[in-house]
Length: 483
Ligand code: DUC
Ligand code: ZN
Ligand code: ZN
Ligand code: ZN
Image 1 (cartoon, helix red, strand yellow):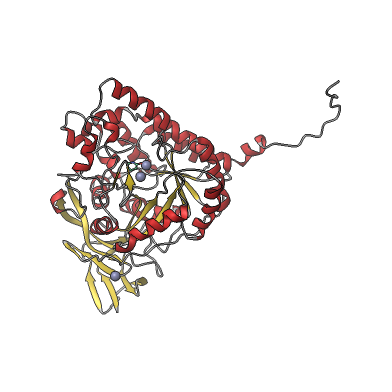
Image 2 (spheres, rainbow, N blue to C red):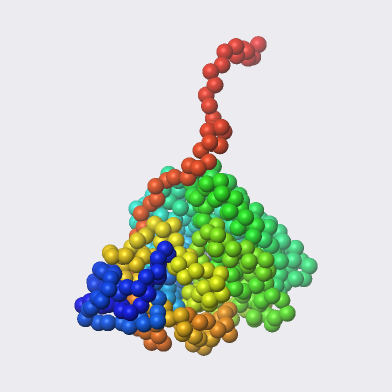
């Protein structure tokens, strides 16, 4: 059976043109004029774009004494509803656990995925076993490794572990990722705030100022450079971190920064003068920042110093959040956003003139596919690519509301925001998953996407390395010792 999307305008990361798109066996098989097929989908007035890819989600993840509420079924259904056709989730071994055993556990969660998915593997401890298993993880098509520089006493790795792991990534052609916050400083600030009686959700923001993120981002960049590895900084939320990334890139390093849609749109006032539930529902790490930081993130997307927009979707119900009443450090960290990332970014980015349509495609899909090495299978409208396609109606409107969302939680951090720009159709590997309000996504459709290692290169600072690399010095006249 063939399908064709007709009368639309194709928008990719680098081009905009009128064409029909023909789909067969889950792939794009032709792009051109006046194509016909068994089933025709009318894209009049719409843009035909690569489906969104969310490079950062936490579905059904054990975290802070509970599990994130959306699983692979509700999470990927939410994703598809908003035009995201693939998610990259985090496999999180507990410290001491085999990476392969953890991967098996994560794999078991995915049987109900409605969209395709891939994984990053977290490095939460270090030892010979981890060193060896990293190669096996890469062989299984997982070629990115996440390092938490925060969550002291739980997931955090120290510099010794991070240096060892980055070095191993460089050998394997894998991409290290960092959650860049100085966990030691966060722990001290949190303890001080609690001791002084600041136990509400706003103290979460005070405990993680931009400096802790800037410091950790700089440190991770320097360590990555010392081992000759690229680096991907997740949830870049502030100017201090963005500045470090800009500086590294200007020197020629492959360092990537990932703002979240939440940080681009919601600011720190969400924590102040609000009721406890409102503020706690927005507790995530890093926390929301002020408008100056938001401007920095938007500028980074425009200039290309920040490359992708993610969600860090890690949703908790209000009841789960309330385990932190009386102690902000016990509020499960995380917010949702999978269904809203694309329409909110379109509304606040494209409709305002901050981003072009092509930049929108780049930061929501194509750049992600390239950085994570799955382009052009994903992230592209080209013959041979997976038919993960959205037909985007720039005039369709809705007001975001928890009562009509796919996520299982009881609120939405974007509640009340009116978006203009929503999918008319969403295809996942050629199958129609969304037709305006109608959700046809079905559990079990999603498949794992294996990724190849990268060529291990990050050589732009080679001159600096030449100067500092150890040299064997031929020397005579060495004085005798022990005389
Ligand atoms: N930050 C969050 O807010 N939630 C999940 C993990 C993280 O780093
Ligand atoms: Zn994180
Ligand atoms: Zn995360
Ligand atoms: Zn199917």
